[in-house]
Length: 357
Image (cartoon, rainbow, N blue to C red; front, side, top):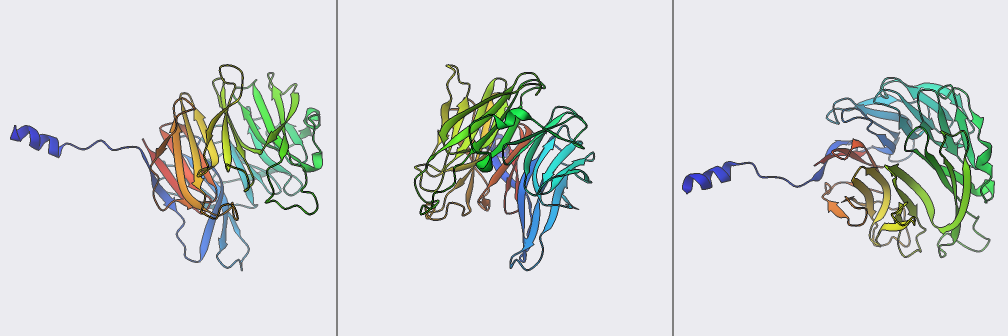
């Protein structure tokens, strides 16, 4: 009996899933502001953003942080423009949308080449079906198509058809489940009337959509008045999750909807007063939500950083929190990974965490 007990005591204990720090930009005089994160494979990852001094006295340095060993080591790469978002076709070939154009890498983010230049802030995101055929979305109902890898672009006429003043409309989300089926989404937000402030009650906005089943040859436009602004969209295997965020006077800071549920309706998948969801990831039989715990004065300052939380679900209705390192805080969190076992989480203030299943 004593031998059995001794063996049990020496055996390693099973540990629960958790998020551990893999990288942190630790500089007392500077802060790394991360704007996007992509892990196209378990080993290769790219985070982009800009470094600025705490006093704001110097011009920010635009950078990419890259890893080739699953987040153990990171290298800093200088960028020529303010980065907005990333899209990777595989673990080598990727595109980056910046403040003034679109760039491409063939080396997992270690080097970048500018492909095209656009009006400052016009484009927000790209999606490529292959090395040549891609789409870009942005402000003023902008949807562009490229057939030469991003060197030249032509407008998609259907983008202007959904209801909503183009001066206040933006397409911010694009997702293809395969080379034929895709969805572009955005919001038309009416201007705040004179005498009103952003702290007034949430008013309906126009949610804009363009759907295609033929790889973008034709698009079916639609628009519907909904509360909140769509800020993230993920789809896989006939299922989808859409994240809507609300102003700081609404009853919840955000809500995640389950698209194309069994009865054909969009159902609420997650909403909580003390969790402001900022990113979502969806895999076959697995979903993750990255959320900030709003500070107590959230009604007065919804953009303040808060404690980081990650929730996990296998049925898109029951969510379980996975412990996150207590040092992880931020106003916006980013999720990325090639599968549910190799996930990474980034805070907008320079910390990257690895998921330990």
